[in-house]
Image (cartoon, rainbow, N blue to C red; front, side):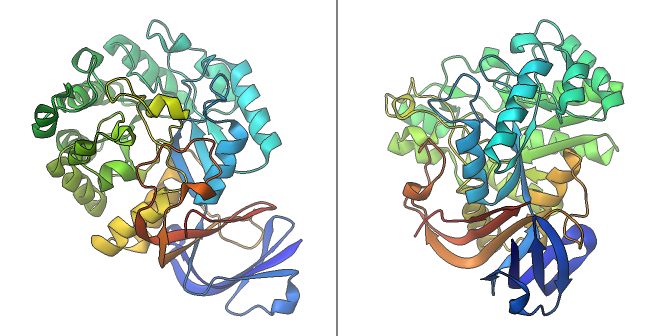
Amino acid sequence: MKFLIKNGQVIDPSEGLNKKLDVLVEDGYIVMISESIDENEADAVYDVKGCVVAPGFVDLHAHLREPGGERAETIETATMSAMNGGFTHICAMPNTSPCMDNAAIISLVLDKAKSAGFAKVLPVGAVSKNREGKELASIGEMVEKGIVGVSDDGSPVATSDLVKKALEYCIPFGIPLMEHAEDLTLTKKAVMNEGFYSTKLGLKGMPSIAEDIIVARDIIINSYVKGWLHIQHLSTEFSLNLVRDAKSRGEKVTCEVTPHHLFLNDSYLETFNTNYIMKPPLRDERDRLALIEGIKDGTIDAIATDHAPHPNEFKNCEIDIAAFGIIGFETAIPVILDLLYHKHCVSIERIVELMSINPAKIVKIDNERIGEGKKADLTVFDPDREVTINSFYFKSKARNTPFNGLKLKGTPVLTVFGERVVECKVGD
């Protein structure tokens, strides 16, 4: 099939490209890029006037639940959801059942993703066997199968010794240790950020130092080892400053933040809506604004969804027993465009860096993705179209989102990956 994406503003900061161009795709590959391509050249035409055409968005942090958690999500529904939300590549976290800690499970996940045929799945292997924090998993064997990093996500790497060993072991493979920064001794039975609102609501809080302590520990170890540390879902001002300082010293430390930590703060828990329960918890307003500043000054490398689907009964329950996490593929682009582009004047180029270019570098995807002869790998979004989020249109099996019914400015329009084309719809 031959189709034409016409009248789009093609933006690729890695190539210094920001120009109105037409893009012609045939059999999954870009065959022509020009200022004007005749519509008769194509079998189908997508007129995307007013929209941005960017290299496909890459999500560094997602929970696909399969194997073991298929009631919440499957690899097929997750990859469909990702493309409906504008993502062509998604990193699958290893806290599945069984755990993604060996080559056989990695192969299973990749085979299922290939069979689904939607967004490409990039598996992240466990740091430790069964994520128990006792001994290293078979990292080398998993690298051979295609993992792009290691993490015990859902838990931090248990000990300093294991962090050191994992960082050292990853160096020759050129992959990062991706850390879920949470000192579990400080967060037992806690449900939200420790602060004014936890006190007001009578809910046990997670102190921000639970994150800061692990970030500080890992940065110190990484400085000694000279490895590559990536901080997942960073949420506090103090941790952000730790990363900023490490970068200023030339250390290889990268980090991601989520749309929900940028958009929301802990005051939303006054509603007792369990869709505001997550790890790390929604922080106070000072932390939230600090993260936005980290976006602006370049400290933060990427925006990742931490897509975390749950069956309805895991959320539709008392707040102190609700599961942590929210889905994120299909709300990320509207939330980020509305907040960062429209409210905080962050450029479209910077947003593309955060959601496409930088994540692609971290997982070693080919830098030049918009070019003649390249596999079609494109995210098209309208930065100005208003959309009211409606989970009815979601492809995810889950519906645990705090953004349902929210009117936002900006929406994904079209996602193209190879021969797969998805016309996105996330609301009305």
